[in-house]
Amino acid sequence: MKKIGWNVAMNLFPFIIYTFLLINDYFPGTVLPDFHLEKINFALFILLLFIGRTREAGLSDVAYAICFHFYILFLIAVFTLAGGESQSGLSLNNIFLWIVFAVSLYDVYKDWRRLKLSNS
Image (cartoon, rainbow, N blue to C red; front, side, top):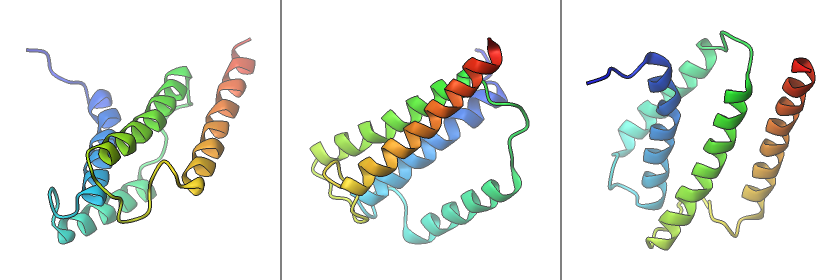
């Protein structure tokens, strides 16, 4: 059996964490009790403070960001169709979600253009 590399595990970590957080948002109390949720949010905050990028962004990072964005939208759609209701107001009908999504994708587009120009 092949071992999973550290980079692969670290790339999957946000997908797993956000999946659990969205499950807890749409179906409260089914996966994580509140005290575990607070610990996870605190740990994510600490990780964001102390762990920075160690390399330049590449095309794989652009693809990763696009996949992550659409994965979150996919989860929101699936959990809504499964009968869940977001406690924080996340839904596909929320205009604020679409504005944040568009701005975030524009940022990914700017990174892609910068990479494209630097490689040519």
